[in-house]
Length: 315
Image (cartoon, rainbow, N blue to C red; front, side, top):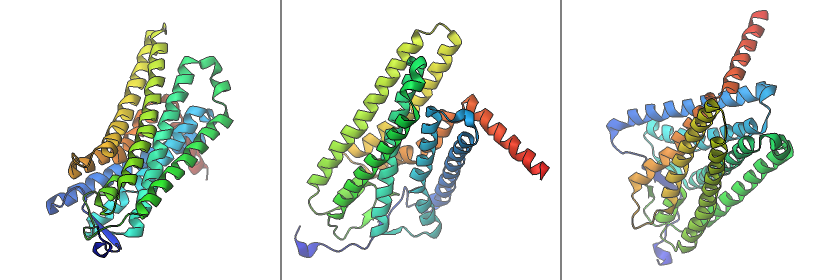
């Protein structure tokens, strides 16, 4: 592409999931509901764990971090989408697009790391219960979360800087509801070979490596569960593992499918729908799967609400 055919981009147009006017109220109500459920459910987990000293354990420490990241992950995309639907304006500035992409990648990568760490934590708790407190000591837990943040920031920064070097032509329409990395690369009219190569390599190493680690941890957990004598404990552990794996599979299969799909077979609508699953649906399901089915979390929430009622009555 010759330099004179390149245009300095100042804004993009997010086409969203559908351009049908009749579907806009339905999409607004659906995504607003899912967003409120996500925020409320994850905030309940943060409230329960922070207010109950009995839950100050590694498993719940990681859950709180996952809940916080899920709220941020969803908040980078859904509010902008709701504003676009409500105002009937689909424009996003170039700077806003790059910023949204950076934070979207940051919290998405953090989700990836935290799910992997949580799988390892469950493996240690179930297969090595006597050594659990020794292995998963507070310093290691803090270090794992800190390393997850550092790695996520560096990866997001790398991707964002590489997108900044791209040039865009006259087509500024993004067939998506967010400024997703692969959409930005496909929209560019300058050479994207390096960007595509880095995206594939990092996705395979990060996503594939994490998924392999999670599956390995759960395979070991299943082996440990089979050795248990109590039928009730077996059933409880298996049901928990299956529900965890369902959400993990939904997150990884859809996200890997989006980022590893080739431009030749790429379908914008299918990609957008797949993105909904791992950006909106998975963060909404995580509180129900990981915590709200947990008796300790339920007990902590009840105690927290009872204490607040008592304080209100005494005052």
